[in-house]
Image 1 (cartoon, rainbow, N blue to C red):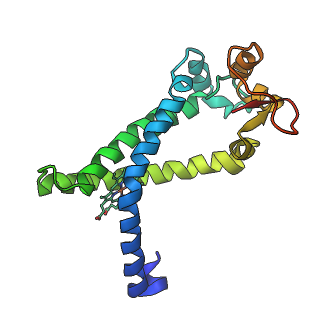
Image 2: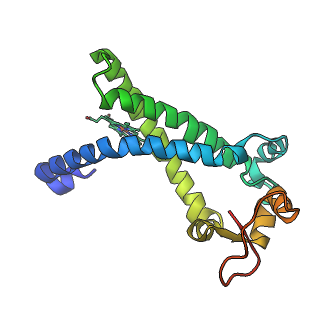
Length: 186
Ligand code: HEM
């Protein structure tokens, strides 16, 4: 899309810059993904009530909220299939491409390149849906990312089982955030 607009010289310069940036950011992606998985693993373990969320497609048709834990079944699917599944695919194929010194043959690198490119398309497409949900799609979601907090009404509406656990003291909570109404930390 960019080539006809910016011309060969700038395009070549830009793609080379991106390639080198990618070479360095790739390994960082692996480390960050590992941290992410460790941090959120516990709350993404499947629970029986997730079946209800899936059966009702998260209330997409009825328009009514389906109770869930800290993460609903949709978020858990994204965690397991996207972060863990695709994360492993991108990391393994990325390392094969980045370090051509494991005695891998050219064919292996060509195959890794195809899988890596296909995985990238899936990742990018899914991330668009995810960005939509995190900004315009779900009211209050963007605010919760910015501040790290959601208000109690939102928590009760969107993640009722988690809200109940917080209220029952089963989940450790820090003090009320500075200047805020009663809130629970995301
Ligand atoms: C979500 C994560 C990632 C995305 C979306 C992504 C995306 C891409 C894309 C679109 C390409 C170009 C494929 C082609 O030429 O057809 C590529 C190439 C490549 N990626 Fe990734 N990548 C990711 C993660 C990683 C990781 C974790 C590593 C390494 C640790 C890595 C290393 C590489 C290397 C070495 C290349 C080949 C660059 C070259 O042409 O010399 N990538 N990646």
